Image (cartoon, rainbow, N blue to C red; front, side, top):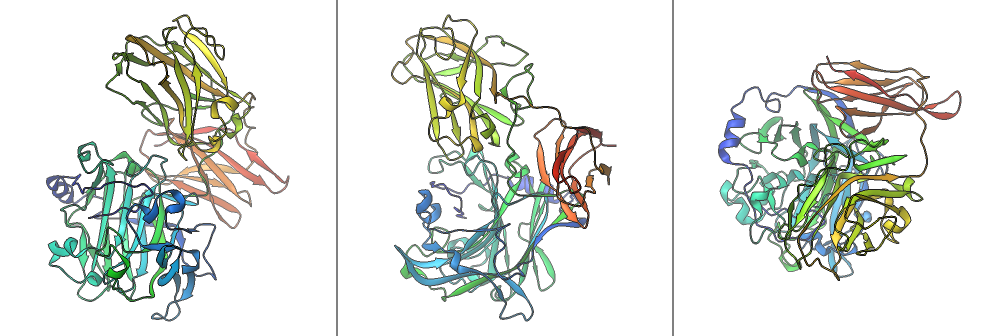
Length: 590
């Protein structure tokens, strides 16, 4: 099934990433939580009952994709998405219900002869695990309309490495409905999961996108059209399994024959929500406006989107989760004292870009027990690699600081050091051969360079959204003439300012273990409060807590006995009229 809704153009060849035998095995496990779910508390909902779209949670798209250099959004879609096509209205066929209305129209904007609407929660609401439920109605899709409720990973990695979860979509090509007996497009709804899989890297599928829907039963066919009436679409999601269902006239039916095993770390990360009504494109049989037969205007209604806990798992985080780093930030270091740091394989990845010229080296570390060591083996070819964070990092506090690194490389090798943001902007600083630059003594032994951040980022790189926090490459004008080994270690960003430890706790904040897998954070402060926590020294999570009356609370799920949770709070002290940071504490799950 073609599903090209992410902002990246690619040639796509469907690929079955999950073997049928594995699917059947997972489905046979009667203890699977997604098959026998225990639905817990409501974590977050959007009821669409107001007078207009809640812009605190949703953003309406304005454009046809060309504004992000991706005309047609990579799918050859025919519509222009306009905020004017998005509204909150009284539902005409269900008295007393207000809902989000997304309408497709015969309307010309520029080169597009159709308009429609799309909203998403990127940077505002993100979900990780739980049960996601969408109550929605679709218009008659016929040929050309493509309604969808779906999710994308918040990871700054490009699609499909960030992952895509399609809770529901309609408007499939006739060829896609063949396996179901060629039902009407108005009676046929499907779901899908797309991830990056190395095995899917074949000619014609350069993106390496792997689709669980390819040659796998992933649909529901209703005896009556699904249009102009509300149906429930559900995603049950844990760290190990996913299950997609449709609740039609009170009866719940599975999309896939069995739960899907979560076979990618991308599916274990937070996702944001999207709702849209596309017109035409590769997913449908309408490649041109004249092939669109769907009645216009056509309106998709969404009564609500709700996220519940599932077997004690599930989190919803509000707002931008990229918190500015302070003090010293370690990119790759073992012993240097830092305020926060990346850990290779956990919160960062180390990439070697050209395996044809370089491989693993054997030089020992400068400090600690870890080192980035490579061997350059192909004179005359380029080399390069770097450290990439698994989530965007805000280093805006480092604008007047420095980036320090240690390197051992032959004196006659010219190289570049660079950084890159999530917007694909990059900047590079050259280190000529046999020349002392930014303090780097070129004698072939371990030496230290200290680069001002203002020089490192140049005029375009966005410090508030860094992804490639350290890169090294050969100098294109002076490629090495002989083989050599080189190593990099102790990479640290320094803001140039010291940070004092947070004050001792002065407010009513505490944690309570509510089950074997959940820990509740509480702050009875009378105003807003945030909790910051890590699990087993993993990536720090920063969450705006739910305020009910004078008490703030947040429940962290997916924990297990023995997990060490470090936490602190930031809250508004109403009596003293300023924010308070509590000291870091720890709790071991019992």
